[in-house]
Amino acid sequence: MREEINAIVKNKTWSLVPPYSSQNINGCKWVFHIKHKTDGTLDKYKVRLVAKGFHQRPGIDFTETFSPIVKPTTIRLLLTFFVFYKWPLYQLDVNNAFLQGSLEEEVYMSQPLGFADHKYPSYVCKLHKTIYGLHKAPRAWYNELRTFLVSYGFIISRSDTSLFILRAAKLVLRYLKATCHLALKLKPISPLRLVAYSDSDNGRNLDDRTLTGAYVLYLGGSPNSWSSPKQRPIARSSTEAKYKAIVNSAVKINWVVQLVRELRLPVSHIPTIYCDNLGATFLRQNLVFHCRMNHVAIDYHFVREQVRDQTLAVRHVHSADQLADSLTKIVSAFIYQYHQNTIGVVDSTPILRGRIDGK
Image 1 (cartoon, rainbow, N blue to C red):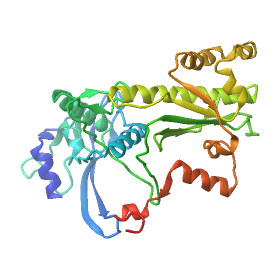
Image 2: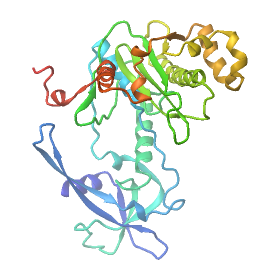
Image 3: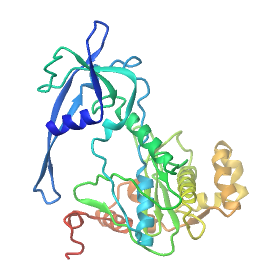
Image 4: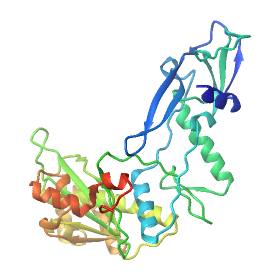
């Protein structure tokens, strides 16, 4: 607790001021936490002074609170390149990160329990910097970090505003929180190709007859992104449903290609989408289907123009090799396990304990 208070004082987080009737004074509390190592043994005891943010009034004590969060796709894409090129990877942990963000609004807080000033016990804390628990804390920390990195020559990615690119050297700031027993295995397979498997469930939801479209996107041999949302409006045919799934895959591929270009990294071959519906794959360039698909004309031209310009390819794949199948429908345990292994989902317990393949 003393270390936490010393860090707050050193950072000039607040100053003591006399209270007055119109102030909205936020409470605060001490939060205790025990951190464990990956093997379950004790690492250290942690304590944090947290403001009772639920006392804050919107529009008075805070305004905008949105803070960008790095996209999982960005993390996986960068890690894939690091694995492929065998680059060194560094992790940076900022102590008391939220104490670095500057406040624009006037925010007052009661003095922390057990550490009230002996000379001014009735005074309150006028916050100059953010503190954990405030609604504005994440946004203020992001703004502070952004200003610092930009001043040192970093460029904010247009594809993901949480990614900062340094042209002279590639630095990745990341925070990964994995599940307890599953992880994605990234493999340095050459060539580095962008490949997506796209699928739809043909309206198996009996409640509202909506379709579930899905895709799994690979960079090299490693899964980079996947999604299985409901499709709206309701598709009129299986071809339309499959084609909408292709469009969603194409949108994601375009975003990834833009991010790769910003990083000035190479990707070999034209990005390819695999679909197990012949009608949908023919639709990418066959004008005969156009009269039956007027209601999806925008989506039709979005993909067709990319195929025509050779910036995207759409290919047919047999249903048995459709890796997005498990994201749209119920499959047998054997097929599910096959897809899980092929996609690259593995038991992470040995890796977390510092052992790979029993070594």
